[in-house]
Length: 459
View 1: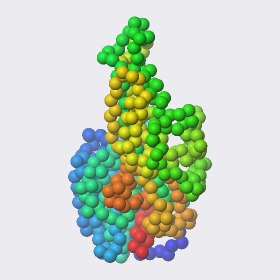
View 2 (view 1 turned 180 degrees about the vertical axis):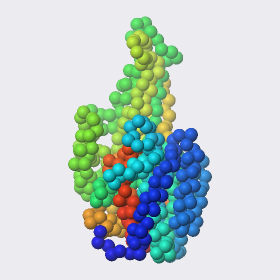
View 3 (view 1 turned 60 degrees about the vertical axis):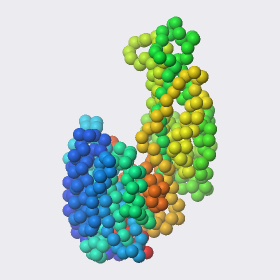
View 4 (view 1 turned 180 degrees about the horizontal axis):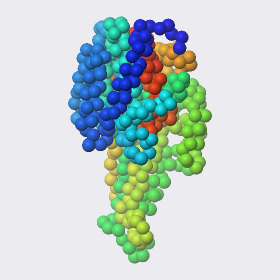
């Protein structure tokens, strides 16, 4: 906390209560993108964001249709000789069910012991506002941000950003930038900043197996025709080796090997992951031999069987030989795996291992995403890391994440722009869960970080 106070810091400090009050106002909007009944609420949130951007002094602000929920786009130019930074976030939130598990109503924000409880507080309305407070402070005290800033806030992140790839492709020139700052991120603790160096991609499909036109009596046909459940069980078992590797031919061909520095960075998270798994309710661990649990979660590709069903599942018994069975699976991908190629490899594996004479259909699931990686020595990472070290008094951890953030791959592939994840949500803050919370102190602190990072990126 040793940075000398700037005018923008004094401005932020003077407006802390007003900024908290408007966050509470923003959180009252139930912008649940998954629920058609909240379509008007999602648009109301977009309009709220657009109005707040204008209030912050951003000269160009527009609500732009996307084919689903709208995007809110803004721009503040600092000069043709300045770098351009795109700030990304989303204003939509997850459903709040089950409501009975909330201590206070999810859209009636409540402060308890320094935490603000509400749906969307941690993920990610508070993070979004830190960016607007920062540019407002710079605008009031210095006439504007020191770099060109594009603001891109979407309303479909919580439903997989299905319209985002086409939107970004159609608006490449409008969104062209040197680097992206994604506010959809978090920290390892109150004074433990992190910088994300990699995110996994994802691809999935449903496999439907059919062995005949109708279920048959097991006493008359069970010994003479294939049972769809058994066929599917054998197929499902073929996806992994006894050592936990994915057994699909060619699955690992494009995987970038881990360096010693990668392994060292990943190992920092060993203790935290152990605690995470210990609290998960799982009875034991499992995974690919030759890698630590942390390496498997954060840096190795996976295949998960998400759902298997078929035949008679009601109470009692029904002695049938079922003719249909179904499987959903998803793969988490790492650089440089391609979701489309992995889907082709899965299809080839099914055709090779399916019982002869049985038919199948393979239907891709929505939400495929490319993996993302950024070099920790990227200039924007170095500058952001220096700011975080100065403000928090601790160097950031460089981490990989086992989850997927599709927009990072979209920006990298379509705009040729890497993304620095810069958000302030705390671990255990309940994103997507009941009693989601945001640490009140992080609203002002996050705005300070954004001001300092934007100034650092101008150098």
